[in-house]
Amino acid sequence: MSGGHWDYIQERMMHITVDIPMYVRRNPIDDPEVMRQLEEAVKAIRIAAIYVERVDWLFSGDDGEDDFLRRLAEDLAQAEKKNS
Image (cartoon, rainbow, N blue to C red; front, side, top):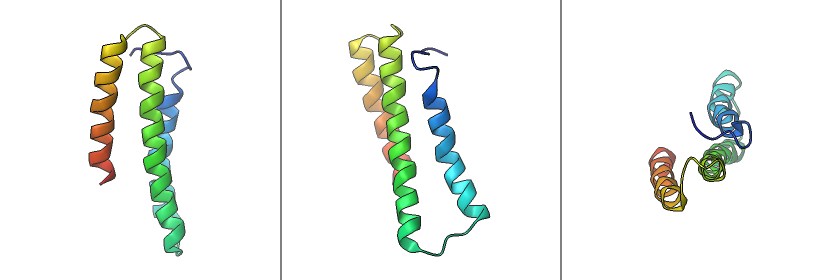
């Protein structure tokens, strides 16, 4: 595993994107707007974690600028598929 500039905080962020749906399954929420906002939170946290990881690898010297841009685009495209 590469990176480590911010002690792999992006991994903890990705755990949050798993924990939110698990929490909701165990503790149903009746309010559709709350559910919608939680879904939006998961999407936003996933995207933020991608940015943290890509910048982490750039700052740690694991990726150059071209790799940063290419991998960022790939990761965001993959996240978009998950988000739709």
